[in-house]
Length: 283
Image: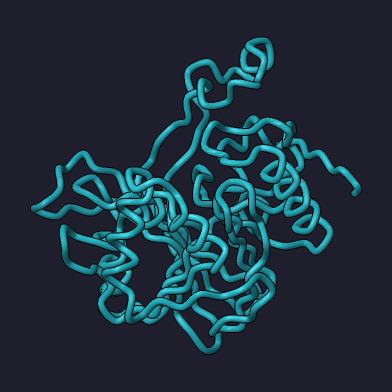
């Protein structure tokens, strides 16, 4: 397979060469339940016939320690000693036929997802489709508020390979997954890679990070999940894996394949751990 390595200098981080979209990408709001210092971010892009909004659930940095195979000299040369810019994010996508939320973030008291959805006029009860890239807690935690479903009307889609992979894990590892999947069991749909889901969204094999890690394509938009945890490091060095990748060999293969696919087809990538502005286009 052709190997393609990218420089950050070649990454187009916003459509329009850095021009902001008509939707403000930074929204400062105040709610009585949140401290005034909370900073929230949104960024809406029109990608072909798809409207997509990046929702930063939690702003964060990845510690270089999660990349044990990265030489200290490389971390130093990239000035990443203090951390790699990142986020925990979700994406709200509107196609011609469906409105879809991709992942739900970490959940819990620090989650900004409910407030940011409200700020763009979307209530949790409005979500009809919920597509999951994988079943790590920072992607499904926002599905529950205690023992209550946050998205009671949502049809939930997850790769069969992902679901079955987690069900085979030890009880202590899968406890959260089992609780959440059971809560949504009447709305749960399992699919195979290559299937076309409602909204004309295609599910793409991206296994390695987890047993059935999934990338989704809607037109020229590619929701890439956790293909990249730290773009400042991994974009130029796709062989470097975070400790979160369950199968490093498969994760590396998927990362290179998806990056090549996005570049060759001029696709806009949306990543759950991309820092602001949440999108990246390679050329």
